[in-house]
Image 1 (cartoon, one colour):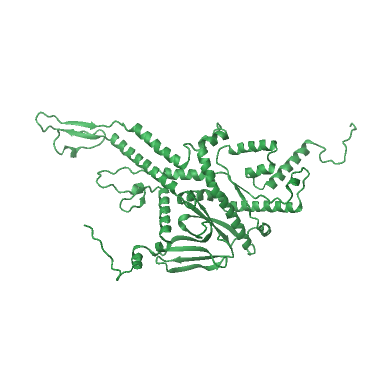
Image 2 (cartoon, rainbow, N blue to C red):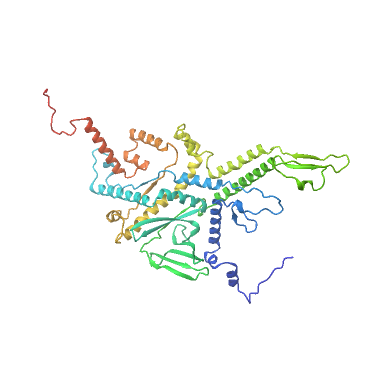
Length: 524
């Protein structure tokens, strides 16, 4: 009979009970944030191969660490398929595996009708604007190379799918004067939004644990918008009871009117951020596949090493049996008229076809959930399919990838804008690694666009063919085609092409460089 103990509130108050039941750190985070972080950490453990639940603790553990179930006299096979990790990586490659580009369109200052005329010459203001956009675009590409963004975006795409959101922090290094984009997984991020607007960031806290002299500490870096309209930075290290262990950075103004953090969420429904419902569906299907593989391996073991039946043998005979190749067994009869017998109880593998069908259905459901086809693009690199056939084959994953890009695109543009604004606020520093005049010339026009590319084989070739037809039909300009292809620095590339065309013309026409001179008609 269970005994229910009623606490005496005259001796212990509810807050004191909470202090005993919950850690101060957990209470400070709040129930909702604590539950979110615990779920995200559980997803990361699952991604790392800890896909079995310890019945005693309820924690996810590797297959080899799972104890023997109660009541079994053998150790059942524990096996991890980890399709979960494979599918996460594939989806991240679909989103960020292509050679993405950046476009900074110049503002059209001159009259559009005049600009369409063959004899059009850009005005001074238009030339200045074109040069500004070109330098701005080149600066963004330099930032991408410095921050190794192709590699970072692949990693960030995985974190975003696992945790439902990923954050990017913008930082200025005063020692070398460079800007840094630091991606953080969402289990270390606690954002605070306005009650009226989920896009209006009021504060962002970055929290991580660290060990100092074998003591677990909590490091918190906080960006907060204050009443004066500027963002403040504060960083401290706390003990487990939330007493201050060390102040790393005293609260000071960054002289920025925005928080230098960009969040990249997974959104499903209006008002929902950090959706992980797809992750949970993938985990449930992966659990089924793991269990099926474990049962299949155990079944194979029992089929290979069949049970030995001793009939009419003396008691205790089985204790002397040696199970080994070529082993010999001697039996003596103990019952009148009954001869001892030895038989092998064999199975027939009658479950094989049913297992294959069920396994295919479960794995097919996993593909349906993730929109990934049963074949990967790398396996189609044989030149037998054109772009239209590839798009039909990968229609689902292409549409889902483009849906994810609807989140990545505007927020990467926001990252670029905030970075330039940050650079403009730091351009007077002695250590500044960028051209101050270029940063200053950008002004307040921060417009930029992302040009995403699908990681399909021969996709660029098909796009080039399409753009060539559009230019021949005068439906697209050369600059517009280059922009759609994601060419870096379109103006410089056009000038390079013009120079090569002029060089070829000079080699073909020996009189191309002579002006006002007629070729001699005299025979020599």
